[in-house]
Length: 377
Image (cartoon, rainbow, N blue to C red; front, side, top):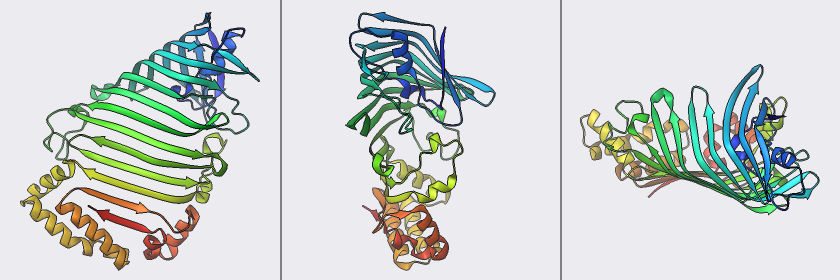
């Protein structure tokens, strides 16, 4: 059995890359380069495989297993029955490229938590890179990765969740690092038995069949400022609604590679903007109906009562103009659930330390300093 070790907190999914070309190269060295997890502090990852062989310009690796050790304990994290790296070539300086890769029967598991089975993942345009200089835990990059018919099992609840497709893309490369990317997880089919029983459970709210969700995301990285932008991260479900989140920050510390992470480094993080938006597709209506029924009211009566009480409930903020904005938006949404959106966009970017300082010295001015807006429509 072939074994190699590397410090890392490795997620096997991001270990997927490979290389491409005519095989005047060492297939085992290439396999190791593609299967090396990203280095992070605090854990040691061991990757083993039973065999590696050349088949024309491809490299085939069998029985790839990954385990993670923290301290004296080691836990198997995942395995892949076969990894086929397509058209592998050596690009120089110990690096490799592949036109594609196929991962067959990948299993990722967390002991006592869940297991995930991905029958096949197909990847495109893989390249290994030397991450030692920038310390970014991305030893392999790729253009796209697609997996279909994924299943997640939660033994403790005897629940199985089906996922139609997972797709990740990386774009706009600067050198060997991607500056933008997208993710889509579609057809997340969750049975009602996955939710604990109770007055706010999906069954109690009137849902009669499995809940089906989609998750989509797109974002960009700014390596020169240690910044990033989550332009959109949306969780949506038919007859439920959609919840979207966006965040733009700079000067984010590389905590993954710190031998001893210093939480105070987060005080230097700079906030550019953040937004949260919810659009209802019956979930809020169902919740309001349920609460109103508990109070012996109709939903319209309960929404009107809550709308009238909001100004008093928000008085502790001690910022009348902002209180009015929140009360008006929340009241509008309660009486006619549609879309409600909160945006934070300060006139100039603010560090976490500056925000904490304002919150401690003049908390009532924080909504104004952050330029917080709330709107319902």
